[in-house]
Image (cartoon, rainbow, N blue to C red):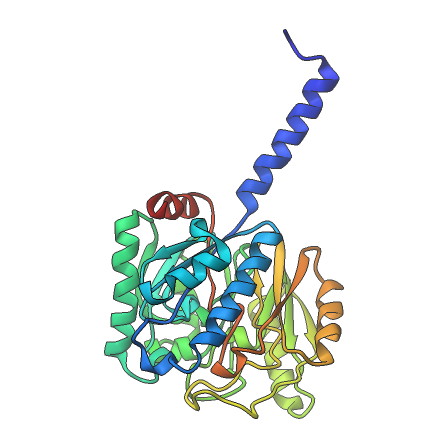
Amino acid sequence: MAMRPVLLFIFILLTGASMANTVRAELIVLASPAGMDSYYKDAAPDILAFHIEYARQIEAHGDKVLILTSPDFYRQYVEALGADKVVSAPMQDIWMRDFAPSNASAPVMFRYSAAGQGGSQDEADIVQDVLAAFLEETGLNFEESDFINDGGNFVDDYAGNVVMSTKFLADNKLSETRAREILTVMPGIDHVAFIEADEQGGLEHADGVVSFVDTNTLVINSYPEDADYARQLKADLKRGLPEVKIHEIVTPYDDSEIYDERFGSACGLYTNALVTPERVYLPQFGIAEDKIALKQVRAVTGREVVPVASQQVCHMGGGVRCMSWQLRGESARKLLDYVF
């Protein structure tokens, strides 16, 4: 029997909304430490605790999570999250953002930089090769580039706008003009702003300085003690992305405790947020400024802002965004179909 017109309209409206939510849900991939990795031995309990609570937040707010783990930690993750969110697929490092494909809308795998492994290009290549072999098995499609860049130095709004630090220019021996020509012919990249990192040497990632919390909307760190840098940062952003709105947010940077001097600290950097089409997963550090940052970000985005406790891991130089690789659409389906 045919549906009445009103019932048919409601059915289409509801199923359409359901399909839209499915399409817009992000798959967020995390990686455990390698079981025998002495570098992360002391920090492993904190990393696992962060992953588990972060994963619960992801699932509770409508996105999907998958943890690639070494066999040593498989049971702990499964007991906390369930077997449908965990796969035994050991990676060689926990910072998935940096060595995985960038740009969830049009994935491209740049060559992971030596700085990501403390200065060793051989080690960086090995870390990325392990992931690349895994992705080849899954059948994921992505562009490959010989240009050197970490995912932490590729901050985009999914609408063609990208911010990178000038480390990309130095690593690849390119002028800004030539780099922009190369990048803007890649799928999903229309406009690029190159900024100076706020700390020279080491990683020099843009995602410790800026974050797109909505289309054409950037939040940036405040630099009350370095007005010259703040002015130059805004000028560089406006020059490369003239249509983008820029908002400063509170930045109680704390480097009093650092796990490895080569990588610094991400404590107090709310710009290291993970942004999906529907949500902003905002790091929190157990300090008074957390509420201020939440209020400031919620005021400039239409997306849901989800607080994520990050104080267990921020002293290692990253957290919410740095540990997360994002996939969507066909890429997400292929990975989940392969592992389950």
